[in-house]
Image 1: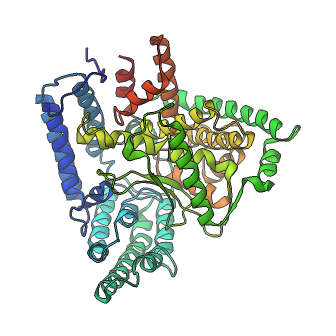
Image 2 (image 1 turned 60 degrees about the vertical axis):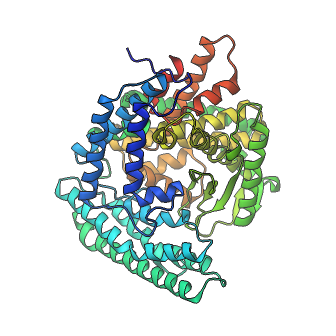
Image 3 (image 1 turned 120 degrees about the vertical axis):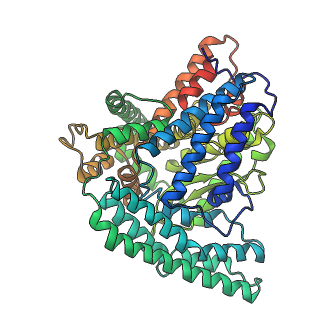
Length: 559
């Protein structure tokens, strides 16, 4: 029986470490997009090979690594965890490729087109040489987009077509990015500073023009060639969904049981909301209590710069007060940057620091067009989710553990682990007294009701389970929209972003609550096993393991 205990001192450089480092190094060498995310100056004027041939090359790397893992001798428990994690993750990747599921990446939130555009959010532009690199990469967008389109055509030819809703949504987004005052115009305005040499400024402008033309051509291809081949059916079906769920969550879940659990969890949270509404104003409903909070100037911020400054202050405060009490915050992780995103999609997200921490971890707020007033009672919990003790502390702790983890372990990402940890972090901050204000606690519950509603909507829609009685029958867009807004308080732009996300990214959204469920269970199980349980020591131990599939995490923590 494999013992996945990872708590012993590990001597770096084992056979397993060499396999993991080789795999990660090969991935980085073949993926300029990944190199950008890591802050590495490697082929930064290029893109990945997004053609079917490129997909096949990655598959061969996965299979070669799995073969090498079979030959490597684990030296200790840390190695055994690495082997278990890599076999789980890479095995699912291989299974997805074998079934042809990995070809289709056409949706409104996590497509190949998004990857091609989003690299510019992370590329440095402090020097003329760096801006020149950006300009050359902008020129390369045409080949990258064409390669991605080839792969989408291959998926359609293989019998897996995109949903027309997702095609239309992506066309709409590209049109926004390339329009007057859109992402590319804004990027040129922000980057072409007066102190740039004229030649570099001209090179950048030419690159922007080329990229806009390339993206517009892609939108035209999507609208005229791909859309007629798309399906009207939004649901991917239970077989595709089951594999997607395993990839995102890191464990196999009983989808029917989880669907029912999601309904029960939503009811539990809404009862807490009603109790909290009574604290805010006796006799008030949840909606009435939220209206009271919205109208309270103490919770209001006007302007995106004020929002950025507020989230920076709250994030810094959390790091300084948690360090040494409930966490050991690595020195490199004590700085985080709050950012307003250059897009207007309505999402909030985190980007990890570079390998050497020269680029810090960042929280990004993508503010919808026309939104200029923000309510802090809703958003404090988001800062804890994206910052500390959420994503920032989780990813930074792993990246900083160079003397304990190989490069694959430091950089691996599992949604069930990472998003589950971030939700665990929100509840933890409530337990520690940071959310004692009833308005802030209502904000936590509002976010939690959304995450529980996601479980029901996402699983129900794609597995075609019967919808809850309040909307009834088979799931469709109108019922999903009604159900979501029945249980979540959110402006229309952000709500539309969320529901579109569930329709286009099956299996990802439930990973938050399912991961949180695991993290809460693990902490209680660890307490029950150890009469001398110490919360700070527990947090340090689990974060220094790096991200793991939930199955592997459970064994590593409890063994």
